[in-house]
Image (cartoon, rainbow, N blue to C red; front, side):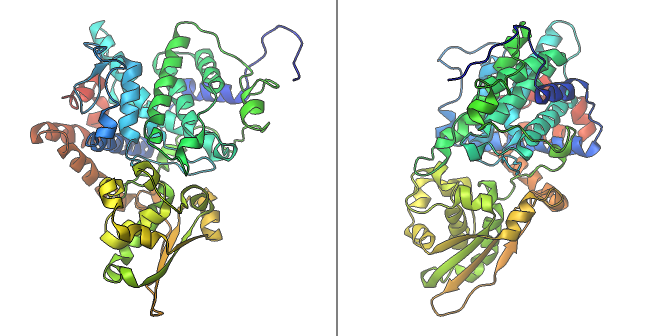
Length: 481
Protein backbone atom coordinates (compact mmCIF):
# COMPACT_ATOMS: atom_id res chain seq x y z
CA UNK A 1 0.00 0.00 0.00
CA UNK A 2 1.32 3.42 -0.90
CA UNK A 3 1.90 6.04 1.74
CA UNK A 4 2.25 9.78 1.60
CA UNK A 5 5.13 11.83 2.94
CA UNK A 6 5.84 15.53 3.13
CA UNK A 7 5.56 18.56 5.33
CA UNK A 8 3.87 18.25 8.70
CA UNK A 9 2.19 21.64 8.21
CA UNK A 10 -1.59 21.34 8.28
CA UNK A 11 -3.04 21.86 4.82
CA UNK A 12 -6.01 24.00 3.88
CA UNK A 13 -9.44 22.43 4.13
CA UNK A 14 -11.07 20.77 1.14
CA UNK A 15 -13.24 23.30 -0.70
CA UNK A 16 -16.56 21.40 -0.32
CA UNK A 17 -16.13 21.49 3.46
CA UNK A 18 -15.42 25.21 3.41
CA UNK A 19 -18.41 25.89 1.16
CA UNK A 20 -20.79 24.14 3.55
CA UNK A 21 -19.38 26.05 6.52
CA UNK A 22 -19.67 29.43 4.80
CA UNK A 23 -23.28 28.62 3.96
CA UNK A 24 -24.21 27.53 7.48
CA UNK A 25 -22.65 30.53 9.20
CA UNK A 26 -22.91 33.41 6.73
CA UNK A 27 -25.86 32.85 4.40
CA UNK A 28 -29.14 34.56 5.25
CA UNK A 29 -32.27 32.81 4.03
CA UNK A 30 -34.58 35.38 2.44
CA UNK A 31 -37.05 33.21 0.54
CA UNK A 32 -40.61 33.49 1.84
CA UNK A 33 -41.49 30.39 -0.16
CA UNK A 34 -38.76 28.45 1.62
CA UNK A 35 -40.06 29.43 5.06
CA UNK A 36 -43.66 28.68 4.15
CA UNK A 37 -42.66 25.30 2.74
CA UNK A 38 -40.54 24.65 5.84
CA UNK A 39 -43.58 25.25 8.05
CA UNK A 40 -45.50 22.63 6.13
CA UNK A 41 -42.46 20.37 6.21
CA UNK A 42 -42.27 20.65 9.99
CA UNK A 43 -45.96 19.78 10.27
CA UNK A 44 -45.68 16.86 7.86
CA UNK A 45 -42.53 15.47 9.47
CA UNK A 46 -44.05 15.45 12.93
CA UNK A 47 -47.23 13.93 11.49
CA UNK A 48 -45.14 11.02 10.23
CA UNK A 49 -43.70 10.57 13.70
CA UNK A 50 -47.13 10.51 15.33
CA UNK A 51 -48.39 7.93 12.84
CA UNK A 52 -45.34 5.74 13.50
CA UNK A 53 -46.14 5.63 17.21
CA UNK A 54 -49.05 3.32 16.40
CA UNK A 55 -46.59 0.52 15.54
CA UNK A 56 -44.94 -1.56 18.29
CA UNK A 57 -42.01 -2.36 16.01
CA UNK A 58 -41.15 1.34 16.25
CA UNK A 59 -42.07 2.11 19.85
CA UNK A 60 -40.09 -0.82 21.27
CA UNK A 61 -36.89 0.94 20.15
CA UNK A 62 -37.72 4.32 21.66
CA UNK A 63 -36.76 5.80 25.01
CA UNK A 64 -33.40 5.99 26.79
CA UNK A 65 -30.56 3.74 25.69
CA UNK A 66 -30.99 1.73 28.89
CA UNK A 67 -33.97 1.67 31.21
CA UNK A 68 -33.84 4.39 33.82
CA UNK A 69 -31.50 6.70 31.91
CA UNK A 70 -34.16 9.38 31.42
CA UNK A 71 -33.12 13.00 31.92
CA UNK A 72 -35.58 15.05 34.01
CA UNK A 73 -35.86 18.43 32.37
CA UNK A 74 -34.42 17.04 29.17
CA UNK A 75 -35.70 17.15 25.59
CA UNK A 76 -39.36 16.20 25.31
CA UNK A 77 -39.80 13.61 22.57
CA UNK A 78 -43.04 14.52 20.74
CA UNK A 79 -45.97 12.21 21.30
CA UNK A 80 -44.31 10.39 24.22
CA UNK A 81 -43.56 10.71 27.92
CA UNK A 82 -39.79 10.56 27.34
CA UNK A 83 -37.42 13.26 28.61
CA UNK A 84 -33.97 12.51 27.19
CA UNK A 85 -30.54 13.98 26.56
CA UNK A 86 -30.40 15.69 23.15
CA UNK A 87 -28.37 12.98 21.38
CA UNK A 88 -30.71 10.18 22.45
CA UNK A 89 -33.76 12.35 21.74
CA UNK A 90 -32.43 12.93 18.23
CA UNK A 91 -32.28 9.16 17.71
CA UNK A 92 -35.85 8.79 18.93
CA UNK A 93 -37.29 11.61 16.85
CA UNK A 94 -35.40 10.52 13.75
CA UNK A 95 -36.57 6.92 14.05
CA UNK A 96 -40.20 8.00 14.50
CA UNK A 97 -40.06 10.34 11.53
CA UNK A 98 -38.61 7.77 9.15
CA UNK A 99 -40.35 4.63 10.36
CA UNK A 100 -43.23 4.52 7.87
CA UNK A 101 -41.30 5.85 4.86
CA UNK A 102 -43.84 8.68 4.75
CA UNK A 103 -41.73 11.83 5.22
CA UNK A 104 -40.40 14.14 2.53
CA UNK A 105 -38.11 13.10 -0.31
CA UNK A 106 -35.44 14.59 -2.55
CA UNK A 107 -34.91 12.75 -5.81
CA UNK A 108 -31.62 13.31 -7.61
CA UNK A 109 -28.48 11.34 -8.37
CA UNK A 110 -28.72 10.37 -4.69
CA UNK A 111 -32.30 10.21 -3.46
CA UNK A 112 -32.73 10.99 0.21
CA UNK A 113 -35.08 12.37 2.86
CA UNK A 114 -33.93 15.76 4.17
CA UNK A 115 -36.51 15.98 6.96
CA UNK A 116 -34.59 13.12 8.61
CA UNK A 117 -32.43 15.92 10.02
CA UNK A 118 -35.30 17.08 12.24
CA UNK A 119 -34.12 14.53 14.81
CA UNK A 120 -30.99 16.53 15.58
CA UNK A 121 -32.44 19.96 14.82
CA UNK A 122 -35.52 19.71 17.02
CA UNK A 123 -33.75 17.96 19.89
CA UNK A 124 -30.91 20.47 20.00
CA UNK A 125 -33.19 23.48 19.52
CA UNK A 126 -35.44 22.36 22.38
CA UNK A 127 -32.41 21.78 24.62
CA UNK A 128 -30.85 25.16 23.80
CA UNK A 129 -34.14 26.99 24.19
CA UNK A 130 -34.76 25.51 27.65
CA UNK A 131 -31.19 26.23 28.72
CA UNK A 132 -31.44 29.82 27.56
CA UNK A 133 -34.60 30.42 29.59
CA UNK A 134 -32.99 28.82 32.66
CA UNK A 135 -30.04 31.20 32.26
CA UNK A 136 -32.19 34.28 31.75
CA UNK A 137 -31.55 34.60 28.02
CA UNK A 138 -33.96 34.76 25.10
CA UNK A 139 -35.02 31.31 23.88
CA UNK A 140 -34.69 30.02 20.36
CA UNK A 141 -37.77 30.57 18.22
CA UNK A 142 -39.47 28.36 15.67
CA UNK A 143 -38.12 30.79 13.05
CA UNK A 144 -34.61 29.68 14.07
CA UNK A 145 -35.76 26.07 13.83
CA UNK A 146 -37.16 26.58 10.32
CA UNK A 147 -33.94 28.30 9.22
CA UNK A 148 -31.96 25.29 10.41
CA UNK A 149 -34.34 22.97 8.55
CA UNK A 150 -33.93 24.94 5.32
CA UNK A 151 -30.14 24.77 5.62
CA UNK A 152 -30.08 21.07 6.47
CA UNK A 153 -32.35 20.35 3.50
CA UNK A 154 -30.06 22.37 1.27
CA UNK A 155 -26.84 20.67 2.38
CA UNK A 156 -28.26 17.18 2.07
CA UNK A 157 -30.01 17.89 -1.23
CA UNK A 158 -27.12 19.66 -2.96
CA UNK A 159 -24.67 16.95 -1.91
CA UNK A 160 -27.03 14.41 -3.48
CA UNK A 161 -27.91 16.41 -6.57
CA UNK A 162 -25.10 15.09 -8.78
CA UNK A 163 -23.29 12.61 -6.54
CA UNK A 164 -24.66 9.08 -6.59
CA UNK A 165 -23.37 7.40 -3.46
CA UNK A 166 -25.71 4.44 -3.93
CA UNK A 167 -23.92 3.47 -7.15
CA UNK A 168 -20.84 2.68 -5.08
CA UNK A 169 -22.89 0.88 -2.42
CA UNK A 170 -23.14 3.70 0.14
CA UNK A 171 -26.36 4.60 1.90
CA UNK A 172 -27.86 8.07 1.75
CA UNK A 173 -28.10 8.36 5.55
CA UNK A 174 -24.49 9.50 5.33
CA UNK A 175 -25.92 12.80 4.08
CA UNK A 176 -28.16 13.04 7.15
CA UNK A 177 -25.14 12.77 9.42
CA UNK A 178 -23.26 15.45 7.46
CA UNK A 179 -26.15 17.91 7.32
CA UNK A 180 -27.17 17.33 10.96
CA UNK A 181 -23.59 17.78 12.16
CA UNK A 182 -23.04 21.03 10.28
CA UNK A 183 -26.37 22.66 11.09
CA UNK A 184 -26.14 21.56 14.73
CA UNK A 185 -22.73 23.20 14.93
CA UNK A 186 -24.30 26.38 13.64
CA UNK A 187 -27.08 26.21 16.24
CA UNK A 188 -24.43 25.80 18.93
CA UNK A 189 -22.93 29.13 17.84
CA UNK A 190 -19.99 27.70 15.94
CA UNK A 191 -18.03 29.85 13.51
CA UNK A 192 -16.84 28.91 10.03
CA UNK A 193 -13.84 27.03 11.40
CA UNK A 194 -16.03 25.02 13.76
CA UNK A 195 -18.47 24.00 11.03
CA UNK A 196 -15.60 23.11 8.70
CA UNK A 197 -14.13 20.94 11.45
CA UNK A 198 -17.36 19.07 12.12
CA UNK A 199 -17.97 18.58 8.40
CA UNK A 200 -14.62 16.84 8.19
CA UNK A 201 -15.56 14.52 11.05
CA UNK A 202 -18.89 13.72 9.42
CA UNK A 203 -17.17 12.65 6.20
CA UNK A 204 -14.48 10.72 8.07
CA UNK A 205 -17.25 8.63 9.63
CA UNK A 206 -17.79 7.20 6.14
CA UNK A 207 -21.14 5.62 5.36
CA UNK A 208 -23.51 2.84 6.23
CA UNK A 209 -23.85 0.17 3.56
CA UNK A 210 -27.08 -0.25 1.61
CA UNK A 211 -27.19 -3.97 2.36
CA UNK A 212 -30.25 -3.56 4.59
CA UNK A 213 -32.30 -1.84 1.87
CA UNK A 214 -32.15 -4.45 -0.87
CA UNK A 215 -33.48 -7.92 -1.55
CA UNK A 216 -33.08 -10.55 -0.33
CA UNK A 217 -32.43 -8.98 3.10
CA UNK A 218 -34.34 -5.70 3.20
CA UNK A 219 -35.26 -5.06 6.80
CA UNK A 220 -36.40 -2.54 9.42
CA UNK A 221 -32.95 -1.05 9.97
CA UNK A 222 -33.84 1.28 7.10
CA UNK A 223 -36.53 2.72 9.38
CA UNK A 224 -34.11 3.77 12.15
CA UNK A 225 -30.89 4.30 10.20
CA UNK A 226 -31.60 7.98 9.58
CA UNK A 227 -32.35 8.60 13.25
CA UNK A 228 -29.05 6.96 14.06
CA UNK A 229 -27.27 9.20 11.54
CA UNK A 230 -28.94 12.38 12.76
CA UNK A 231 -28.06 11.52 16.35
CA UNK A 232 -24.46 10.85 15.36
CA UNK A 233 -24.27 14.19 13.56
CA UNK A 234 -25.38 15.99 16.71
CA UNK A 235 -22.88 14.03 18.79
CA UNK A 236 -20.06 15.11 16.49
CA UNK A 237 -21.15 18.75 16.77
CA UNK A 238 -21.10 18.54 20.56
CA UNK A 239 -17.60 17.03 20.43
CA UNK A 240 -16.29 19.83 18.20
CA UNK A 241 -18.05 22.37 20.42
CA UNK A 242 -15.64 21.25 23.15
CA UNK A 243 -12.66 22.22 20.98
CA UNK A 244 -11.90 19.06 19.02
CA UNK A 245 -9.87 19.75 15.87
CA UNK A 246 -10.90 18.79 12.36
CA UNK A 247 -9.14 17.07 9.46
CA UNK A 248 -8.60 19.35 6.45
CA UNK A 249 -8.16 16.64 3.79
CA UNK A 250 -10.96 14.37 4.98
CA UNK A 251 -12.15 14.19 1.38
CA UNK A 252 -8.99 14.32 -0.68
CA UNK A 253 -6.20 12.72 1.35
CA UNK A 254 -4.51 10.22 -1.00
CA UNK A 255 -5.22 6.62 0.03
CA UNK A 256 -6.87 7.58 3.32
CA UNK A 257 -9.53 10.13 2.40
CA UNK A 258 -13.22 9.69 1.59
CA UNK A 259 -12.64 10.05 -2.14
CA UNK A 260 -10.12 7.22 -2.45
CA UNK A 261 -11.51 4.88 0.20
CA UNK A 262 -15.24 5.10 -0.48
CA UNK A 263 -15.95 7.05 -3.67
CA UNK A 264 -13.76 5.18 -6.15
CA UNK A 265 -11.44 8.16 -6.56
CA UNK A 266 -14.20 10.46 -7.82
CA UNK A 267 -14.40 14.12 -6.92
CA UNK A 268 -17.66 15.43 -5.52
CA UNK A 269 -19.56 17.32 -8.22
CA UNK A 270 -21.50 20.55 -7.75
CA UNK A 271 -23.26 22.65 -10.39
CA UNK A 272 -24.99 25.06 -8.02
CA UNK A 273 -24.26 26.73 -4.72
CA UNK A 274 -26.23 26.58 -1.48
CA UNK A 275 -29.38 28.64 -1.01
CA UNK A 276 -32.97 27.48 -0.47
CA UNK A 277 -33.56 25.50 -3.69
CA UNK A 278 -34.07 22.14 -1.99
CA UNK A 279 -36.73 23.22 0.49
CA UNK A 280 -38.59 25.09 -2.24
CA UNK A 281 -38.62 21.98 -4.43
CA UNK A 282 -39.04 19.30 -1.77
CA UNK A 283 -41.40 16.41 -2.45
CA UNK A 284 -44.00 15.58 0.17
CA UNK A 285 -45.36 12.06 0.56
CA UNK A 286 -49.02 12.76 1.06
CA UNK A 287 -51.20 9.99 -0.31
CA UNK A 288 -49.13 6.85 0.21
CA UNK A 289 -46.46 5.73 2.70
CA UNK A 290 -44.31 4.27 -0.04
CA UNK A 291 -40.85 4.58 -1.55
CA UNK A 292 -41.10 7.73 -3.64
CA UNK A 293 -40.20 6.26 -7.00
CA UNK A 294 -43.49 4.32 -6.81
CA UNK A 295 -45.74 7.16 -5.66
CA UNK A 296 -47.12 7.90 -9.10
CA UNK A 297 -47.45 4.17 -9.86
CA UNK A 298 -49.67 3.82 -6.80
CA UNK A 299 -51.68 6.87 -7.88
CA UNK A 300 -52.12 5.40 -11.37
CA UNK A 301 -53.20 2.09 -9.85
CA UNK A 302 -55.76 3.89 -7.69
CA UNK A 303 -57.20 5.44 -10.85
CA UNK A 304 -57.42 2.00 -12.46
CA UNK A 305 -58.94 0.27 -9.42
CA UNK A 306 -62.59 0.65 -10.59
CA UNK A 307 -61.69 -0.99 -13.93
CA UNK A 308 -59.80 -3.88 -12.30
CA UNK A 309 -61.29 -4.68 -8.88
CA UNK A 310 -63.91 -7.14 -10.20
CA UNK A 311 -61.58 -8.71 -12.77
CA UNK A 312 -58.45 -9.59 -10.75
CA UNK A 313 -58.70 -13.27 -11.77
CA UNK A 314 -58.89 -12.26 -15.45
CA UNK A 315 -55.64 -10.25 -15.47
CA UNK A 316 -53.10 -11.58 -17.97
CA UNK A 317 -50.40 -9.02 -17.27
CA UNK A 318 -49.75 -5.60 -15.78
CA UNK A 319 -47.17 -3.34 -17.40
CA UNK A 320 -45.51 -0.75 -15.17
CA UNK A 321 -43.36 1.88 -16.87
CA UNK A 322 -41.01 3.67 -14.50
CA UNK A 323 -37.74 5.59 -14.31
CA UNK A 324 -34.31 3.97 -14.37
CA UNK A 325 -33.96 4.58 -10.64
CA UNK A 326 -37.26 2.83 -10.00
CA UNK A 327 -36.14 -0.22 -11.97
CA UNK A 328 -32.86 -0.34 -10.10
CA UNK A 329 -34.21 0.13 -6.58
CA UNK A 330 -37.74 -1.23 -6.22
CA UNK A 331 -38.29 -3.77 -9.02
CA UNK A 332 -38.60 -6.90 -6.87
CA UNK A 333 -39.79 -10.38 -7.70
CA UNK A 334 -40.12 -13.40 -5.45
CA UNK A 335 -40.96 -13.54 -1.74
CA UNK A 336 -41.19 -10.36 0.33
CA UNK A 337 -40.29 -11.10 3.93
CA UNK A 338 -41.45 -8.12 6.01
CA UNK A 339 -43.06 -4.66 5.79
CA UNK A 340 -39.69 -3.03 5.04
CA UNK A 341 -39.32 -5.37 2.06
CA UNK A 342 -42.83 -4.69 0.77
CA UNK A 343 -42.71 -0.89 0.90
CA UNK A 344 -39.72 -1.01 -1.44
CA UNK A 345 -41.36 -3.20 -4.09
CA UNK A 346 -43.07 -1.36 -6.94
CA UNK A 347 -45.08 -4.46 -7.83
CA UNK A 348 -46.49 -4.73 -4.31
CA UNK A 349 -47.21 -0.98 -4.13
CA UNK A 350 -49.12 -1.24 -7.42
CA UNK A 351 -50.94 -4.50 -6.69
CA UNK A 352 -52.50 -3.35 -3.41
CA UNK A 353 -54.27 -0.27 -4.83
CA UNK A 354 -55.35 -2.21 -7.92
CA UNK A 355 -57.01 -4.81 -5.69
CA UNK A 356 -58.18 -2.78 -2.69
CA UNK A 357 -58.28 0.82 -3.88
CA UNK A 358 -55.93 1.95 -1.11
CA UNK A 359 -52.32 1.86 0.09
CA UNK A 360 -51.75 2.51 3.79
CA UNK A 361 -49.03 1.60 6.27
CA UNK A 362 -51.16 -1.30 7.46
CA UNK A 363 -51.13 -2.76 3.95
CA UNK A 364 -47.46 -3.73 4.38
CA UNK A 365 -48.22 -5.84 7.43
CA UNK A 366 -48.37 -9.64 7.31
CA UNK A 367 -52.15 -9.90 7.64
CA UNK A 368 -52.66 -7.99 4.38
CA UNK A 369 -49.67 -9.47 2.57
CA UNK A 370 -51.12 -12.94 3.20
CA UNK A 371 -53.91 -12.27 0.68
CA UNK A 372 -52.94 -14.63 -2.18
CA UNK A 373 -54.22 -12.21 -4.82
CA UNK A 374 -51.34 -9.82 -4.16
CA UNK A 375 -48.50 -12.16 -5.02
CA UNK A 376 -50.53 -13.73 -7.84
CA UNK A 377 -50.89 -10.27 -9.38
CA UNK A 378 -47.22 -9.45 -8.76
CA UNK A 379 -46.25 -12.56 -10.71
CA UNK A 380 -48.07 -11.14 -13.73
CA UNK A 381 -46.34 -7.76 -13.64
CA UNK A 382 -43.66 -6.51 -15.99
CA UNK A 383 -41.56 -3.50 -14.98
CA UNK A 384 -39.85 -1.58 -17.79
CA UNK A 385 -37.88 1.63 -18.00
CA UNK A 386 -39.52 4.53 -19.82
CA UNK A 387 -36.56 6.54 -21.10
CA UNK A 388 -38.52 9.79 -21.15
CA UNK A 389 -39.44 9.29 -17.50
CA UNK A 390 -35.74 8.77 -16.74
CA UNK A 391 -34.78 11.91 -18.63
CA UNK A 392 -37.43 14.08 -16.98
CA UNK A 393 -36.51 12.69 -13.57
CA UNK A 394 -33.05 14.25 -13.90
CA UNK A 395 -34.21 17.49 -15.58
CA UNK A 396 -33.76 20.24 -12.92
CA UNK A 397 -36.64 22.20 -14.45
CA UNK A 398 -39.03 19.25 -14.19
CA UNK A 399 -37.83 16.87 -11.46
CA UNK A 400 -40.69 14.56 -12.37
CA UNK A 401 -41.18 11.04 -10.99
CA UNK A 402 -43.23 9.48 -13.76
CA UNK A 403 -44.89 6.08 -13.80
CA UNK A 404 -47.50 4.53 -16.07
CA UNK A 405 -49.67 1.48 -15.41
CA UNK A 406 -51.81 -0.54 -17.82
CA UNK A 407 -53.64 -3.82 -17.19
CA UNK A 408 -54.21 -6.45 -19.88
CA UNK A 409 -56.94 -9.09 -19.52
CA UNK A 410 -57.12 -12.65 -20.80
CA UNK A 411 -59.98 -11.83 -23.19
CA UNK A 412 -57.77 -9.34 -25.07
CA UNK A 413 -59.26 -6.20 -23.52
CA UNK A 414 -57.20 -3.64 -21.62
CA UNK A 415 -57.62 -0.80 -19.20
CA UNK A 416 -56.57 2.71 -20.05
CA UNK A 417 -52.85 3.40 -19.86
CA UNK A 418 -52.67 5.79 -16.92
CA UNK A 419 -49.51 7.88 -16.72
CA UNK A 420 -48.76 10.22 -13.80
CA UNK A 421 -45.64 12.38 -14.09
CA UNK A 422 -45.81 14.46 -10.91
CA UNK A 423 -47.00 13.11 -7.55
CA UNK A 424 -49.35 15.21 -5.49
CA UNK A 425 -46.48 16.19 -3.18
CA UNK A 426 -44.53 17.83 -6.04
CA UNK A 427 -43.92 21.58 -6.20
CA UNK A 428 -45.97 21.70 -9.42
CA UNK A 429 -48.98 20.38 -7.47
CA UNK A 430 -48.56 22.45 -4.29
CA UNK A 431 -52.02 24.04 -4.48
CA UNK A 432 -53.54 20.57 -4.76
CA UNK A 433 -51.20 19.00 -2.23
CA UNK A 434 -51.30 21.39 0.74
CA UNK A 435 -54.93 20.58 1.67
CA UNK A 436 -53.98 16.89 1.60
CA UNK A 437 -50.95 17.63 3.80
CA UNK A 438 -53.13 19.49 6.29
CA UNK A 439 -55.57 16.58 6.38
CA UNK A 440 -52.70 14.13 6.96
CA UNK A 441 -51.45 16.35 9.77
CA UNK A 442 -54.83 16.60 11.47
CA UNK A 443 -55.47 12.86 11.18
CA UNK A 444 -52.06 12.11 12.67
CA UNK A 445 -52.79 14.27 15.72
CA UNK A 446 -56.03 12.40 16.31
CA UNK A 447 -54.09 9.14 16.66
CA UNK A 448 -52.11 10.48 19.61
CA UNK A 449 -53.76 13.40 21.37
CA UNK A 450 -57.06 14.28 22.96
CA UNK A 451 -59.07 16.80 20.91
CA UNK A 452 -58.18 19.75 23.14
CA UNK A 453 -54.42 19.15 22.88
CA UNK A 454 -54.66 18.45 19.16
CA UNK A 455 -56.55 21.72 18.77
CA UNK A 456 -53.76 23.67 20.47
CA UNK A 457 -51.22 22.18 18.09
CA UNK A 458 -53.38 22.95 15.06
CA UNK A 459 -53.86 26.52 16.23
CA UNK A 460 -50.11 27.02 16.77
CA UNK A 461 -49.26 25.71 13.30
CA UNK A 462 -52.05 27.48 11.48
CA UNK A 463 -50.31 30.77 10.71
CA UNK A 464 -46.64 31.08 9.83
CA UNK A 465 -45.71 34.40 11.45
CA UNK A 466 -47.33 33.45 14.76
CA UNK A 467 -45.65 30.05 14.70
CA UNK A 468 -42.25 31.51 13.86
CA UNK A 469 -42.39 33.81 16.87
CA UNK A 470 -43.08 30.95 19.31
CA UNK A 471 -40.17 29.78 21.51
CA UNK A 472 -39.10 26.30 20.46
CA UNK A 473 -39.53 24.77 23.92
CA UNK A 474 -43.11 26.04 24.08
CA UNK A 475 -43.79 24.51 20.69
CA UNK A 476 -42.35 21.18 21.83
CA UNK A 477 -44.39 21.36 25.04
CA UNK A 478 -47.53 21.24 22.91
CA UNK A 479 -46.52 17.76 21.71
CA UNK A 480 -45.62 16.18 25.04
CA UNK A 481 -47.69 13.59 26.86
